[in-house]
Image (cartoon, rainbow, N blue to C red; front, side, top):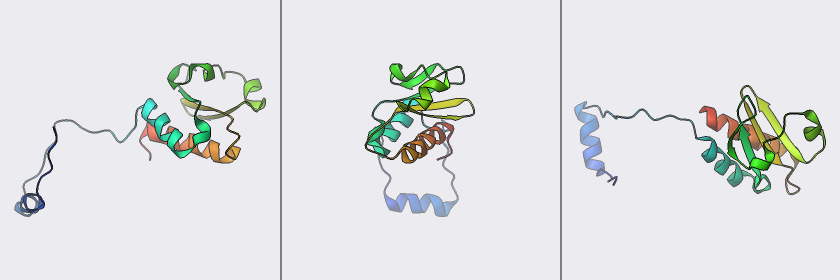
Amino acid sequence: MIRAMPTVMIQATRDSGIGVLWRVQMSPALSPQYALDYLRELSPAAARSALLDADGRLLAGDRELESVSDDAAIRGGERVVVRDGDLTAVASDGRDAPRALLEFDLRLAMAAVRGHC
């Protein structure tokens, strides 16, 4: 259970010069699954989405979107695919949102996995 410190204690600790140490270094990055959850909150049109690694293996999301190895699937308009380095983000082409907006949101999800958000 995490308990909040009273403000007076926080101020006293800060003023005394006592540092606060954490046992675990926190990563600013989100896990692939949390990044997809974040994406789905940003864009409901991305309800069906997936994150893939450099080899095209599913990291998180909809397994049906895993097969995006060829450009034919991209040009078909059924999926929005954004590749950036070793990550690929895929979403079903949401009819509710402009394609450019969905691509932007996919890039945000990939940045969240890398800790650049």
